[in-house]
Image 1: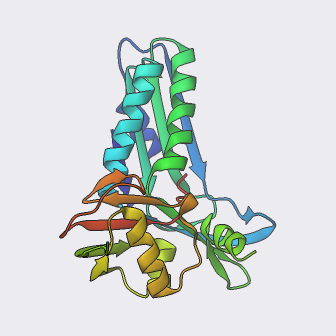
Image 2: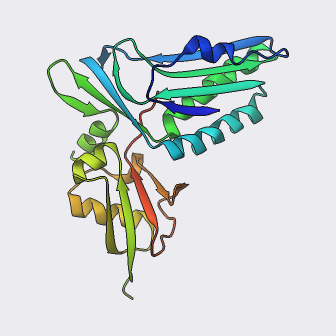
Length: 144
Length: 84
């Protein structure tokens, strides 16, 4: 299950909801807002998502992970809106019979999510400037 | 042979929306593929972004740049994603 949330992520609640009597391991990844990117001091982030395709493409990613690394439960929540330093931007949790599938499925899900889901991140810097992550660099490159 | 015009609703996201100054517009464009829509709207709004790192969806389904577009389609143009 994947969802987009405008509210803070409740990591404890999400983990508790994943209990499964067949699970021998649980692996979780939390993405947090960092105060620096490529040498610039970041003050806050702004996430935008196109929810219908985050859901459909995200469910596809979870299904792929299930096929490659059979797990029992997997869940992902991604924040949208304005986030401050230290806020949780994304939460991925996987429960499985053994640890190997949990680690690998969790890694697969977060990696594919970053590559494929229509989610954008705008950084606001302390100097008042702002920029879309990955976009401005491409645009700059295209002007070379 | 000239390409026939099609009525396409184009939706812009993130940086594309800021460049275009709007989130959506319906245009009559001489286009056959998703790539054509990207190029036409890039010219229209003076965007410098190449399509290489961008993604496209047609009627809420992820698509390829070579995917054909039909009259009445909604084409969603996604700049490089950055989730996580």
